[in-house]
Length: 455
Image (cartoon, rainbow, N blue to C red; front, side, top):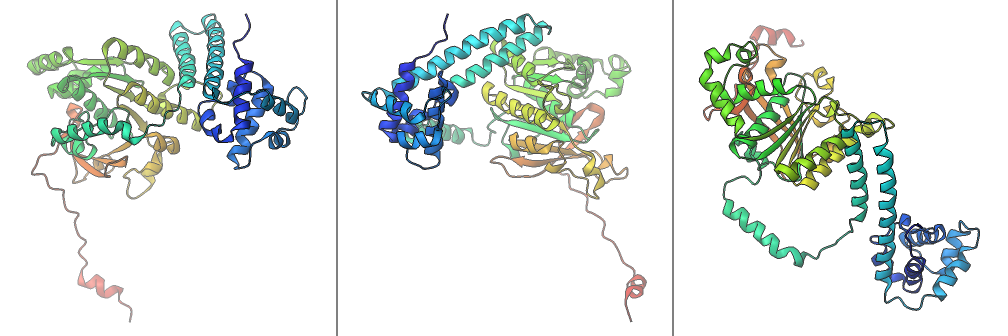
């Protein structure tokens, strides 16, 4: 069986571009060089794009000079002249371009079937094979997407409905709540398509904050939430959820005394979790492609409103040939694409480098993110968790966490202070009467002032 292609359609597209160069922008919108089956046609098309992109005229003479000899060895000028001479009309040029594109996708599907066969007979586990097949299929699916430019007038009615919905909502946030009203006011909720990075040094509480957001969405908002923990197993995660929801000291849950001292609270917390749509995965070795495949399946079966991944630096690479910077770039980009594709907010936790601990002011900033370039570029929101008491034993801000907004698209930056109840593995809104402690002012004695004067 021969590969699908249409020599006539390829010549029809190229001929139309020679006869009517003003059609190049329209016809090339969804065509790549790789869509052409014949190497000579692909070389001519590449030359057309190069000339057009450089603002130079496109005709058989300029193409002949630009391309020179074709892969077959013949002069490009003679080949282009023959195509132009045998193009009767440009009326069906758009249809020709569509045919070239469709045949290219048909060839991609045939190649995909071969790759699927190779994967099926490979040495990977079945789960890895399924993830690999889905990744390959997604690549072909992305090729089939055509660019679409929409006139503002065509979406105006839908946009007005969005404006009306915002007005009707009043003070309600437009997205999932974090469970901390002050933070919700800043972020206006976590919205579909957003990639939210939560970062911090060890022991700051980034996992606690992320899992609090997850449980709030699942229990109080009735949402379907999926949490991947590459660091903790499900038992440890459940310990934290039970402590947080029941306000039970975590150490009592760990040492087995909670059933005797907080039996009612345990039952209440268990009831909340039982009736929630909170799904956990504690598999330590997970790649972004595997998580993406799992999320797609989950959304089809149960629906999906929020995804949490703990944490970036523990995610397995999908390729052993990438540098670490390339790996992180691929992971964050995949996380962002996943948020867009599934229409959900994705929370991705990240470690910080030790550089912030070398500064007098140890509050983190975006440059402290490990492999920060890709993370900062792909993230819609970056939140840093900082607790002064971790570094200063006698800090006046004991029990207070600073949630620093390092980046926010369409939202103001700043810092939100929240109560950190470490014994309950829980963040809460600060009491309305809380006032930030004033920094003590240095009092300089008169004697010391005089001693510094120069005579």
